[in-house]
Image 1 (spheres, rainbow, N blue to C red):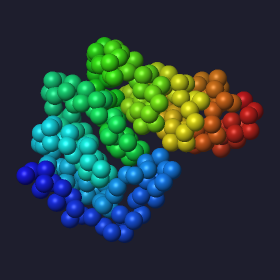
Image 2: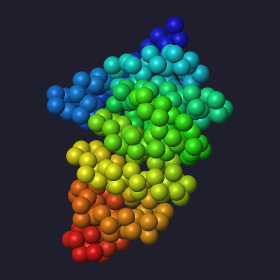
Image 3: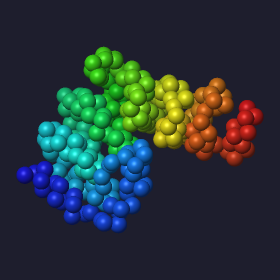
Image 4: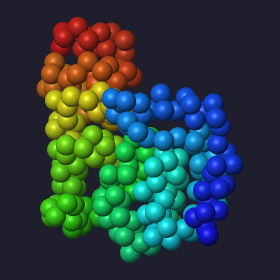
Length: 247
């Protein structure tokens, strides 16, 4: 009944115009990275309103919601998880962290990753650097899970790997971001180029030295989009030296 009420309330925020626009924006058409994803046209702020109202939803119900074919329902499930993780004790945080990793197949668009990965995976790993994780029958320890994700054939798991490190960056810890960025340097997908470039830019906002130390070793081999994102906040003269390969 609660889950039915949640879906009905979410539907009340639906917009036909947005439902027609969002599949194009999120590349859900034939051949797109999110082919087949379905939208009802609900904005993120309204998804947050619904998630806040139902933030005590049981994990079994969250599981059902996360398996929905409707994008916004999966988003609400993840927003509820983020809120429960934030307020939960260590036992609940561990449960949600493992639940998240077991359900990566449903976290299958960039907004779903970006609104949850660093707040659950990143935060848990930052506070539990020696934790044991079972991931697809593999036993990575602590932040090693990020390397497994970064080497995944699944686009979204690779994005989870790099976006999760945002939580470390906010705490001025850059090692994990730079390690995962190096793994993803040769990735073929534009969404990974953008994500890595974004995280490198965030490193640079806090430590230009760390960013440039990485760039000087790798910038000539980086995809152009990744490089442009990474150097966006540097002084214009320095940006041009990187873009023109003069460093």
